[in-house]
Length: 262
Image (cartoon, rainbow, N blue to C red; front, side, top):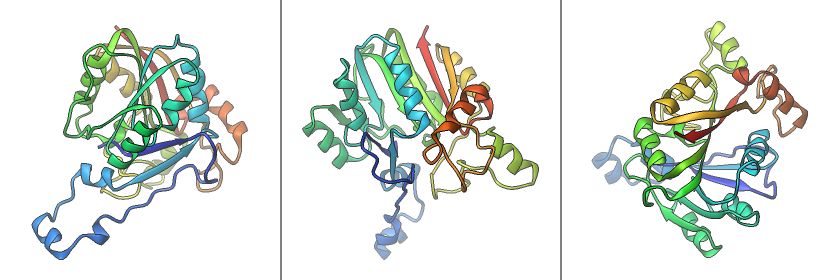
C-alpha cells in the first residue's frame, strides 16, 4: 500500500500527522489464527495520516510545482482528492491513486480521476507516458520494492516528465544526534507500528536510486532542520524554521527531490 495521505487545504489540527490504527484490535480470533502475520499492505490500508499546507514540506513542494508548466498530474496517495483539486484550479489535469477505497470514491465524486491501487502488490493503473508530473509525497518509505515503484513511475511519466518525491531523511540532524547516543532514529520503524516506515533514505542514496531508474535530479530541498527535537517544536508551530531546510538540506527532517525523466 500507500498510506492514505490527505492534504488538507484548511488546517484540521495543529498536529501535522495524526495516526490511528485499529484493524488488528478489531480482528476476530479466527482471523488471528488463520492470518497471524500482518503484511505491509494490511498496515498501510488500516492507517490514516493527516497533513496540512502549513507544513514547510508542502509549501516548498507547491513552489516547485508552480515552477512547472501545467499538464497532467498524478497524485500518489491522493486520499480524498484535496491536493489534486488544489492543482486543478491552477491549470493541471489531476488524477490520483490510493489504497483507501472510500477515499478513492470521495475523490472521484469531487472530480479527480482517482483509482484504487496497492503499490506493494499492483502496478500503477495508468497507461505508459501519461503524466507530465508524478507527485509521491511520503510514499516510498512505506513500500517494500522501491525499485519496482520507481520503474512504474518512470513508465507513467511522459518523455521529459517530472517526479516530485518527498520522504523522511534518515540522516537528519536529530537522527545523527540520536544515533551518537545510541537512540533509535525517528521515522524508521523496526516493526509495523506508528508511521509504518519500512525504508529509510539519505539525500545521496535517494539521488543515486533515482539516477539508476533514469531520473536526473533538478532540485533537492529540505523542509526544516530539527536542531531542537521534534517533540518540542516543528515547522507548523514555528514557520520560520523553514529557512534552516534551505540552508542545510542534508540535515533536514524531510527530503524533497524534483527529478526529470532522462
